[in-house]
Length: 395
Image (cartoon, rainbow, N blue to C red; front, top):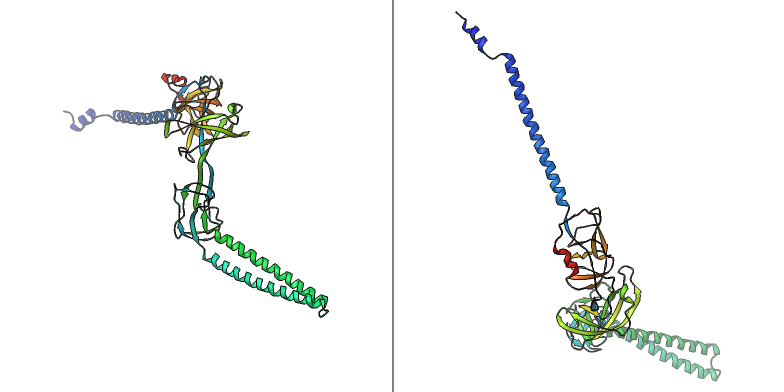
């Protein structure tokens, strides 16, 4: 009969079997850990790839189209008053009252404001008193000198004494003249307590407030009034160099304003700078236009239409392709390596949906349409599939 303990020892798992089971479990655990690490690395790489792919913007590319001769040249212009003067105080004081406000029409010499200047009043009174003293001394010296000259004729006094009295008269006369000059100076300063319009026009700004302290000679202070002569207006336009040879004094142009879409105002070119600005590549010209009805306002923007022949070298691109940078209007050009270059251009004509480029663009260039504001030279981009946008440049 078998011993029970011997039977259990013979039928139980051996040490070799247990070792194999432990090794298998360890291998399975290592495999699970390795699979998890590999999955995490793969997910991280996928995220980095997605982020790198998302950082490359997708853009549409167009080709500039050749512009025809068109119907003239349209450029932006700035409207300015024929004359404009900032009225500042010439003497210190307080605003007693102001007599004109923005929009009021004033005549030359009309009082705009009155200042209180008690210091000037007191200094003027003292100067007048000093002048009266100097005048009295002059009269006394004149009487004395006359008497001594009379006594000199009778040999009652010496020539030296008579000359001294004459010299005293000359000195007292000079003092009286100096005192009179002081009175006139302070009278002039006192006259500046009334601010007057230098010419007929319209008050376009007023900062004067009753009781406010006014300090003369402060260049940083705001003018108390601004008076603009708007019976005739000046319009300043920067003309691209390629059109500068066609500009001459006396030529006519039409102005159009945003607030009067269906109205044309005639202007005449009066003068030009006769030089091309090195930064903008344009020449400054001045036009003038009558403004009897007040349609033109100082500081306004206007489209100026010149009836001149267009340039055959102009290229047309959509307005959305123009990027505004610190260097002015620019376009973004796509290179062969997929990187871009931001290049400044000169706009010959703004037609709203499209613009004509006179300088900075060539036929065959690949222009990025609607470039992002953050794009910079050297950035990598991805070109979207061609669509109907290419036809926009020809519109």
